[in-house]
Length: 374
Image (spheres, helix red, strand yellow):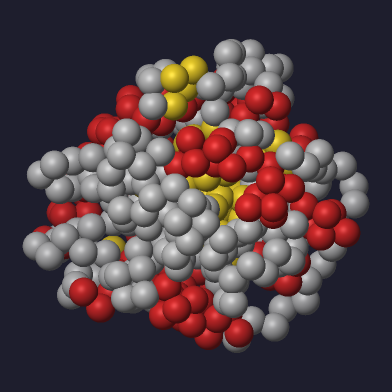
């Protein structure tokens, strides 16, 4: 997600241009019951297996609600979950986190990890929201790296060290990558120790090219994805991670054995487009070689209308509304407020979505630490 430093309209324009080149057919969601598989289930922890089964059982039937946290500040100063509840009387089932502040001296990666543990325990900002519930956790990573500590391609000269078809492990830049991954692994290990499953979405929106991990093409990207997977899974033994690929172009799809879910990010322009986004759903499914992965709306501005999703056979596994802009206040309408106000989602639409029979909220989740294993 672009943090609107250069304006929301610029971000949406880039998305529109990037996706306009895709003219793939849009198959309907498969009719047979749960015709999906996962790439990383073999060594999955018990709670990861439980969550995967839950995602599979609901896929095509209902959509799981999600709301992105504000990773640059604390819950006490901007509580996105409280804002959702104030508008709808419901809590999202998934809360999104970001390791964007991980490598800075004032590391907020630890704060995000602590909030994720709290969310898994059905709590937020020190308050129990739903007794006995386990909120679903997802993490992305706006990866600030190098001396500039930036992630936009235009703001840093850092690129994936790639030579002769593979990562250049002798490069000083590779050392920086490895050091950051070690820090991320330490944070994720805190969640693994508690068997908290994580919808893990690294290297997102790569094919757009606006982040450094997408600036060197699909070959370098897939090599880095493979290394990250090998390091976190085989070296660090983090088997609680559910791998969500969000490359947004078929040429960037990595080894299917390292992918559990295919995601895409949609920010309609103009806003308040509550269509099902069925074209994007079909395009994302077609990017998967065997068309056998769950498809999720991993970031969104406007939330698709659940009735339209069902009608159009575009039942996203979940949606993840982006957070509000820095310093915003409740009920304030402005372009970088993706929840608050009426710019992207009207109050009536938000209330319809969160109280819809097709949408799963926190109070409807089963105990994901006790439900049967697959």
